[in-house]
Image 1 (cartoon, rainbow, N blue to C red):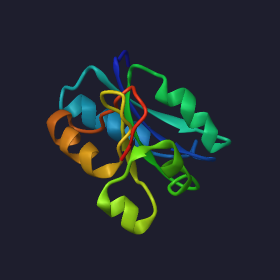
Image 2: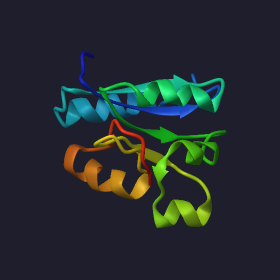
Image 3: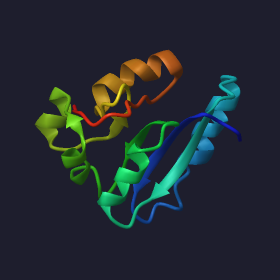
Image 4: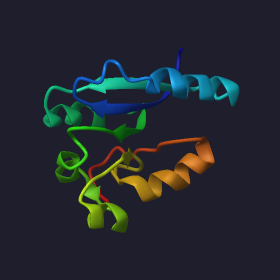
Length: 122
């Protein structure tokens, strides 16, 4: 699927994840031809820096073991993420890397995630 709006999932040992098929089926049903969803199986959390440098990546879901470790790579945290000490979604937009709350509003607009290409913690 050719796309310039990429979303995905980060974690470790997640090649089994059904998320790619699930989201890409949703994109097709909603006729969102420019969207794709990838699995980013990271051996170490610092590999996320490479993802943040991608101009096409709008955001990603976070799964084990990086839900807590991702926080130090973000520019801002929502109140919810700050309270629970973990992040489920990262939105990359206007150079910022916010977590869940802002991503949800963007998802409502475009179906899912968004990313800023500058470093900011949410």
